[in-house]
Image 1 (tube, one colour):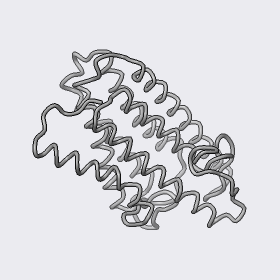
Image 2: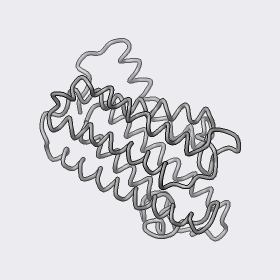
Image 3: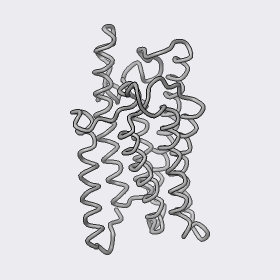
Length: 248
């Protein structure tokens, strides 16, 4: 793991603050202390989901590119791979927002503001820290590439399953097909694999904290989502796990 070689008062405060954010993000949402109001947990009034999602996934593409400009002209292969993976993650999500997902709710402005700031910070800082990449493409680096690709493919597949089911009916319904037969949010699991891949190819302390944040948030979100389905659908399969089939 690459740890900052020089610590300043600002960097200490920043890493402590972001570390707390990473650890508390999941509990804050789950216990409704600072709930993320979007999707099935959204509000009647707010920002249209497609517009909000386009901004929160599209902005990191710009921020990450600007942050990478100082080293991109002379970037080595490792730096290009890390930068490209970050860009692919957010570009894929932006494409899905515009052309795949079907939205029915709105995003609370506070929720949108928090996620926009967090994603722009994540994408931008991971890209900026890439000025100091890992020394070589070792086993963990290749494992990261494989993890990211599996995550992207699995996440895309299950997003398309949901989108195709929504073509058949409006509103919410019990998902079916793929790993939805065994878990409520398998697309969250694959998104985590994608973030694990980013962490393994970058390996900066900040990226590790980002993975911790996503692990806690998506894990808590999957629990809330399963509870929501069981409250709204009496025939929801009781044996479906939260996020990982047969495990969690």
